[in-house]
Amino acid sequence: MLFYYLCMVKDKIKLTESPFTPHLGTIPKAFIGREKEIEIFKNLLSDALINKPSNILLTGQRGFGKTVLMKYLAGIAKEKGFIPVYIPLDESLSDITSLTRRIYGKIKAEMENEFISLKAKKLLSKISPKISHKINDYEIQMSLAITEEEITDTNFSIFLGKLLKGRNVCIFLDETQCILKNGISRYLVNVLYAELPDKAKNWIFTMAGVPILEEKILKATPADRAFEKMIVKAINVADARNILIDTVKNTPISFEKDVCESISETTQGMPFYIQFVGDILFKLKKKGIINNKFYNENKSSIFAELSKKVFSIRLKDISSKGLQLDTIINIAAKQGRTGVSTKYLSNQIKTKNIGVYLKRLEEKGYINKIKRGEYKIQDNLFHQYILEYKNQINNKNN
Ligand SMILES: Nc1ncnc2c1ncn2[C@@H]1O[C@H](COP(=O)(O)OP(=O)(O)O)[C@@H](O)[C@H]1O
Ligand SMILES: [Mg+2]
Image (cartoon, rainbow, N blue to C red; front, side, top):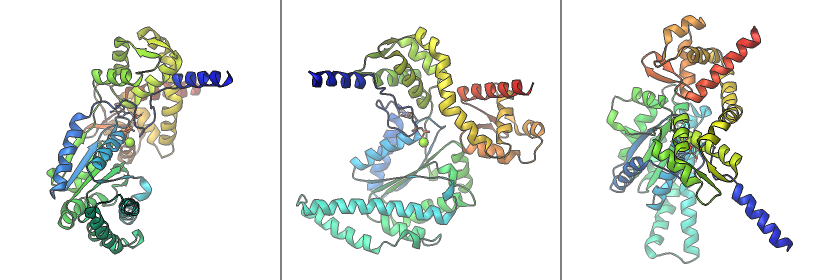
């Protein structure tokens, strides 16, 4: 009897657990859209198998789904016999030596894993003579690999070439915009575009990051065609609806069509916010149909939760460096349909370094360059939060 009761409780808990994934980088229960990008990637995999390596530039605003898309592409690559290597980057790697060592080290480690699992298969006698041959081949290749500490700026492409030669490998660099300082863009583009293809040919190198990444890379290479460009954009109303409806399949919750449209509008089609809003509504409703009335009643508590969990942390990050906070507050206060000019900002904040602050904010993905010398916060919800924050400060000061 007790057991029966416990099972019921457990089932209940399970039922009310939210299926949404309001966390960056987390694979969603329902992965929607991105068909075009997946198609392009599959074609590039086929190219790599016939000795045509590729470089992909994957850009998009924070929360639009770059990391998740890369994880999917890594899965597809693996299915097709490639070794996927995912490498998240951060500012500590923004010198050529640290970066090249990290990339080389991570690729080598993944290849060793692959090698060990092949050997394990052999031990278990689950292996064909063809793969046996591959193991011997691997053995020789891995024994020639050097350690990551031995990698230098000048030998990187040579040893990376040796490591990749004859192997099918897909490398995914995430948050690439963080490391492209001090001539790294030019160095990296040179290695990938000019040097590596001569040494190994069965690979795809994907660099992902916020939109400023494209500008940084293209500054380093006049060869626009060196990169296959993919941009993850906001998702349309139909796809937003699909995320909401598919995610709550087999749960006691359902979404009305109209509310999906409202959520799509407030979130500007950003998957992260759709997951976030879906998650809170799911937890609040517990059971039944979520309609526009319920959504509107709870809108302010959703915004409060977003402020607490996301925006206040962002603002703390922003205020940790120089006049970045002043800069973004001034943008928020002034922006309209168009952006805010650099000239206006440097007058307003009285600094000669406005360019530095704008660049940092852009690198973090908090603001976007609309056109030359003109910036904007494109994320409406974050914009609204900064305006409220500004009002609070003003009220305190009065
Ligand atoms: N195609 C998609 N379908 C449904 N949810 C998605 C999709 N792409 C991303 N998400 C969700 O959106 C959030 C942000 O995704 P992420 O890949 O981390 O964004 P980015 O790397 O661009 O900042 C995650 O919570 C993820 O679960
Ligand atoms: Mg990401």
